[in-house]
Amino acid sequence: MRLTGKRAVVTGGASGIGRATALRFVAEGADVLIGDIDAAAGTALADESNGRISFRHTDVTDAAAIESLMQQCHDGGGLDIVFNNAGAGGAAEPIDEIAPDDWDRTMALLLRSVALGIRYAAPLMAQRGGGAIINTSSVSALGTGYAPTAYSTAKAGVLHLTKLAAANLAKDHIRVNAVVPGFITTNIFTSHLDLPTAQRGQANAMIAAAAAHAQPIQRAGASEDIAAAVAFLASDDASFVTGTHILVDGGLTIGTRASWDPTQPSLLTALDAFK
Image (cartoon, rainbow, N blue to C red; front, side, top):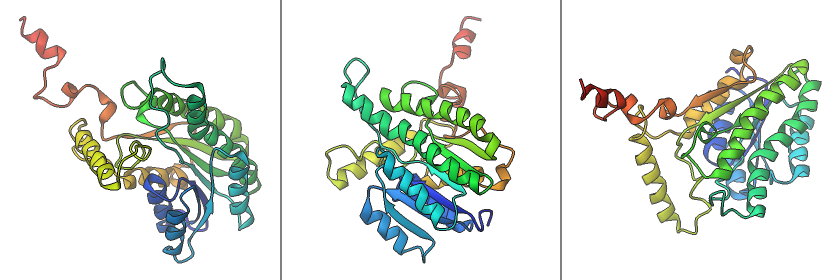
């Protein structure tokens, strides 16, 4: 119950990582306001929460909507925690093909929304004497080949923004950190595809199966894995942690497969052949 008495905002809270985090926050004692464009799922989650979760329809590409979301939480009793999590896969084209408007929309959804979430939350948190902000980045911020170019660029921006905001807001006792998920079983990269629900589920299953074989921890990541890290960063257990990130990727980024799988050839084994 590390979050007892705290009030939190979770964007993208109706599904996936956001939903799992909202539930984790409640389990740890917080009251949660989720913002999402999926009114049906958001309302259903609120109805199932025995009054611990509230829902507000929120498009995070709309600055006024973000401001209103933060203000509603503050007006309801205060704002202590913000999880800037809303997002989607964005434009999938490579840099030499992407349309300027698609680039801008991806940045608005994945990077500008985080900046504005911090901007509108921080003054309200300062009135409470401080708070904790957590932003969702991605392993795609750390290297190539994990996600489309625009998505990866935005998520890299989120990581640097996290550091800058932590420095800016330290004076107000506001900690700012990021969580960096690996391949997690959500709909983020299939929701934009024009596929029937069943086929989308099959695609997600294929991604999960591939991820389980591409990392040292041989299972697909779950939204709850990310929620656990976010809950830590939101709590007083992380009171000396700011301006950094937690990588939750099953070991995906520690190196090539040969670095952890002894059955795979590596540079060292290749050199051994010449001895």
